[in-house]
Length: 201
Image (cartoon, rainbow, N blue to C red):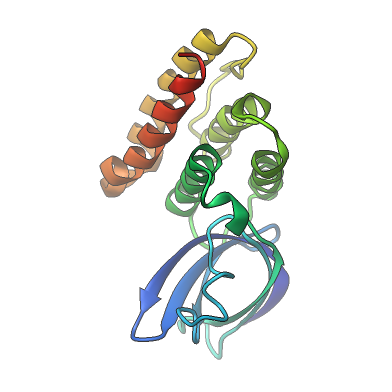
């Protein structure tokens, strides 16, 4: 296996003393995982931030082997880590993506929407500029995986109505996509929901 492509880093966990296992979303190959040597070191730690856009070089000798991944930073979300609301939105977007998608199955619409959502979170002056896109992304993931209905995307122009609609999306996410880790994963969404509620307070 050999793959070179732009990718969105959606999860990273320590492996051994110095390495990391990264999970990345690509347009043509879907969600892939790779072993990043030195991933916990000073040089690569800023690269392995969920939401970062990277150039991925993934290589494996066999289909059963965990590939080795080399990552080059293209666009960093690091500056947003200290901003509670954007950081919570990025954390939830990446957690949902990593948990819901099966590996190595392409979902180009999800890739494009995830990339656009992360860009909007980084660029918009307030959550009202990306909240609708976030709800739309959740609904897109449900629909692409076969669980979506004809639900209209909530409009953040009416903030109270938007929050009600945002709350209603949680049930299908919990029931259909998140599996055994749903409570842990939904706690990230709950933190985001709490911060969104403060906007209309």
